Length: 210
Image 1 (cartoon, rainbow, N blue to C red):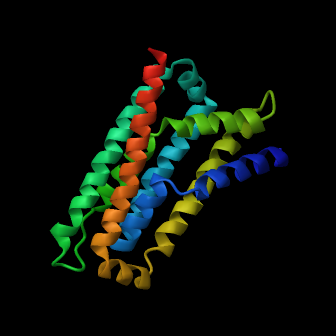
Image 2 (tube, rainbow, N blue to C red):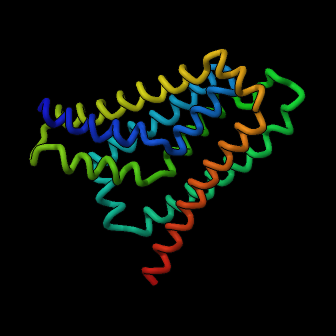
């Protein structure tokens, strides 16, 4: 059992520390908002991590593999949402440029942003499905399955809370305030790139199936 959990933990941590849209979202909110806002986004992200891991255990990854249209619909919705988030980030500097300490995102909105950003990422379910298929024994008991889900959720909480706390440091926020426009638009570019890549790859996949 220890080997199983160690394998799952290593594979999951490799995925967690690879920068993606969740990473960018937490960093942007942590640097430019009160700590509670970035922690709320982390809560939204990790709530979905728990749900995707649970659904993967229940076979959602297999469902996405068996029904590509369902996965593609999620990917198109996710790509469109990320482009919307990027547009809001791009617009935000002009609205707050004259007020250094302005709070542009509430805790509830940050939670929703983290939740929706992660829920529209079906590749997470596929990732957990492949990890669990690789690491779990042929006939895992309920305790092992529950432990695997909780382990992935715990890893996600540790990582995203660390990011929220580390990048909400006073010096980081001071640097952000000095270069708010650059940071916001840089984050917008990265988030938009993730969204566009998701849309383009999905459309290419749809064309190859026609």
